[in-house]
Image 1 (cartoon, rainbow, N blue to C red):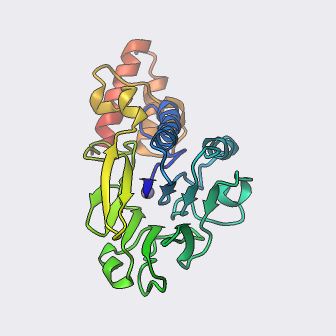
Image 2: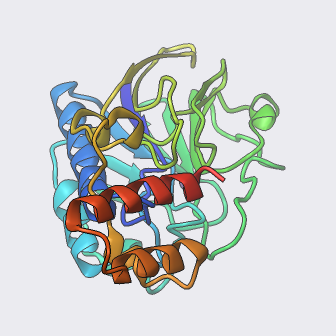
Image 3: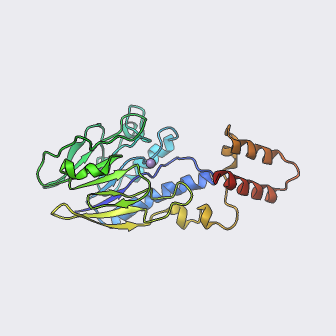
Length: 279
Ligand SMILES: [Mn+2]
């Protein structure tokens, strides 16, 4: 059986630089993940939480998600601590297509993926730190048992009787014998490298998993990452200027300085913001 795993996309998140362009790139990244799932003819696509950010999510993101997941493969979503499941959440507000399954309980709940293959999933149901869903859990089914959730102590996997856990929350990718953290597929903070992306997982009959990582980062291929950009990047100055922060004050001061022409102002803002970010 083939599954495509991703986590921690963080749609609608804030970026220090080029916010609108980066947020559009996050959407494009999800489009690439769905395309990859369809082209690879996977049995299911799995998201281990933090798909979007509840506090910043817009109605257009809700409709974007609905149409993105209106695709030819089953989709399983396990809400995380940034996109927790609740009455006002996108998860509950959206009228999903029938191929989409949202886990909605704090208790790991089974879904049969195929004959003899069970996927256990759980949801965060409120804001707060990530929970350890595997703590105290024990599998009570035969066959291959898999889990999908956001946050856990992965050392617990063997004790639970699970064959493999697909996990989110830790943004650094980690591929262990019994668990996989795919990492965030599109970089969110400077310096995120490594084998991150969507992970094509082949689940064998004995419950072992082999993995192949696909780089699906639209920010990277569109040249939007600061470390890949020689010229000063597109900056989301207006949203930064609205902040009651040191860098918000910095942007307001620079924008108000009549001695700077447009080109110089752009360079001062780009360099200053990057320096503040690296403090
Ligand atoms: Mn996250």
